[in-house]
Length: 250
Image 1 (cartoon, one colour):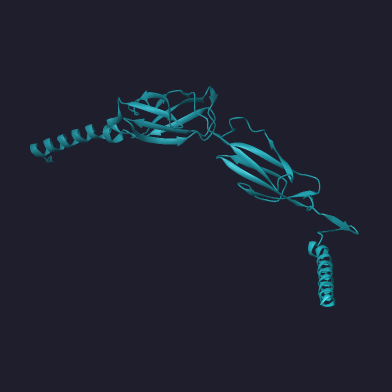
Image 2 (cartoon, helix red, strand yellow; image 1 turned 135 degrees about the vertical axis):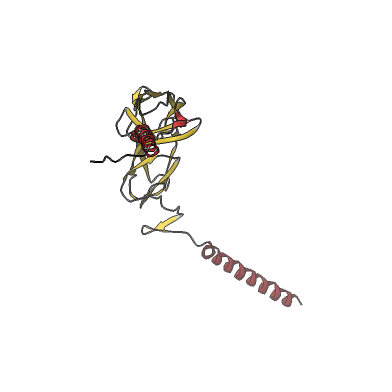
């Protein structure tokens, strides 16, 4: 029985091909996974609320962003990029510096723990201006009462309108609307609200006299006219007497 002989060149080429595949398989088999940064996150010593914005920057370029889904904890993934390895990752909380870590090869270390904390976050305050129409038609109370510097951003304020005697509350206008005497608004900007009242509480117009309980203004012409007529009649009589006397003297 004759055995098939393989050419030496062909055998050598097959060995090179097998060796190349053996070296390439590990590279293809290595999964490309993101690097996860996670840890605690606090604002002024208190657990950051759900929805707090977390961003990651490398060399001042944002590479990832996500809101928190659990109070006091965060998790943010940065897609794999070999050029990131060894670089500093700056983590921000609501756009304020919270901490930093180093980007490592996620194939070796898939999770990096960095606790974040920010303090001294500036707080914005807004002023609520309330007016009453007409003046004296009623009053408006605020709950909570407005501090000297205004309300902290996001504060919910309840306004309650109380009418004065002979008035009733009509509606709100300005930065509030509706006809209910109680109204709640959120202070996310400076606001001005007017409480409008209606009714018979307005003071009556001034009068000079009354007849039978009905107010009236006296007619000055009616008072003066008889005196003018009497004066004219006296002048006519005196004129007639003067003319008659002259004729008698002549």
